[in-house]
Length: 127
Image (tube, rainbow, N blue to C red; front, side):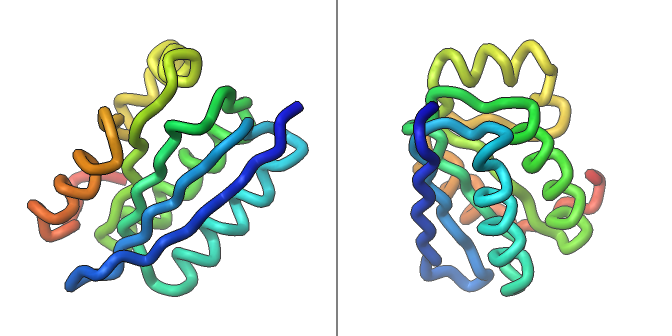
């Protein structure tokens, strides 16, 4: 199985915003690495996170579970996690699991970042 590579970039904005770029596969053997990265971001009081999935070829149930569990913490703090640039196989599973009811997918990271910049980040009606 492929290794997971995580790159993190804090972006200049009035409210803390992080771009998390992932490459490889997200599976049981490495999901804790992703969970640790997201936990660290949230612990730093950054509740607006864009996850660039353009380099991810596979996400296991363990990986999807991290996004679902972390979204609750983020939204309790008026933030959001935006998933951007899913590859076709990843998007297929996302759609089959109907995660679009919980997480909004974006065509690319630019679109997700722009959506954060056009809103206050307050999502009081969710989570």
